[in-house]
Length: 230
Image (cartoon, rainbow, N blue to C red; front, side):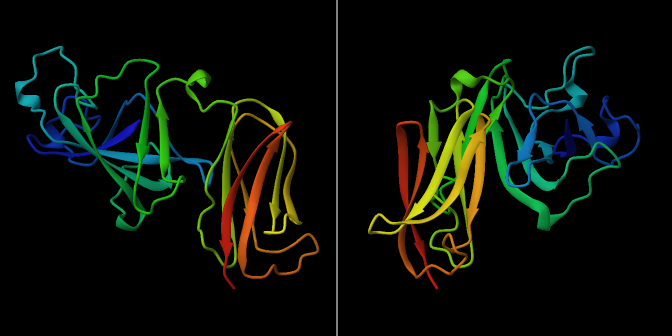
């Protein structure tokens, strides 16, 4: 469900789906996906603005398009815990990504990928799907660039597993010496996260410099560089 927050061609008070006719408060309409903050593992709110539809021209019995297959809709993701009541109030501090949806005739099973280029990091890729399709997910496993990078007090490392597997994620210095093992356990399929606080296996602060972090699953492994600045 998403909050319909406004429209250009009509008043919300007059919308036929408004549960409180005459009120111009935002209300919820059904959409074909959910939005989740994967850092906190919680569903968040999405707010949409009807850019082009005119309910006064609507033929009785016809559909209202929450995501217009013929034109465009505007939306904001609101980084607050998902709720269906009371009406969502505007919170500029919680607004994150603003998206314009153009001609989106959703079909069951569709997946949408949203990529951001500022900052340039693999973490800025977002996946949406109207149906869980594991065959469309990255094959085997994927290791993403840590963020932030460079870092000082701590950094987050994200990776994806296509199926449940024993996983090892280890940090090495430039000499190939193990600094710290961050993960050594069986994990479920899906996106996984861990953090490195810049310390070694003895809890001592590691020196500034370039390090490698390696994700190993069986005989396969992937590695990436990270930069620690003290």
